[in-house]
Image 1 (cartoon, one colour):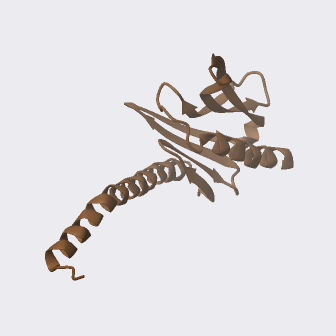
Image 2 (tube, helix red, strand yellow; image 1 turned 180 degrees about the vertical axis):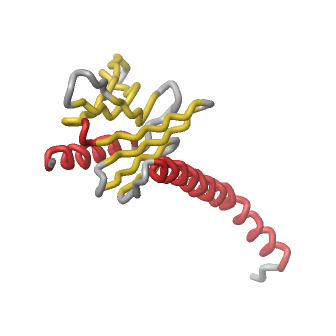
Image 3 (spheres, rainbow, N blue to C red; image 1 turned 90 degrees about the vertical axis):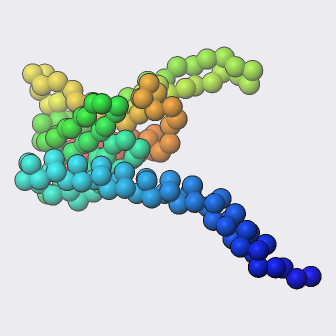
Length: 164
């Protein structure tokens, strides 16, 4: 059985067309993460800090300067930008706020997460809590790695707050 050149070219072209969307999506995510990290680095530079630990998610990035014990947060949602600089010396702890609702379905009770936030509790009552929004169902339709991310960063930051 012989395969002619035309069939081989069509097969290669068809395979390329199937793979192309995945390549474009991966490149887009990589560029988006780079843009978020650049914005996060810009905030750190404005405060004369250097980011040692960092992580990006869909529409936000979070970073930590271990030497100066500060946290940086950058988030873009629709036409709103949220930039935060947090000096951990002003806070006693941070906790995860998981706002969810439960509803009844055919397979039983289902829990849906509406919002995930990292809440910084200040040492004094004069200062207000600072909340970093990791997920909001009104902005993003689907939860990806935000739940694991908010729990991971809560542990990292609480470990730093306890050591002080």
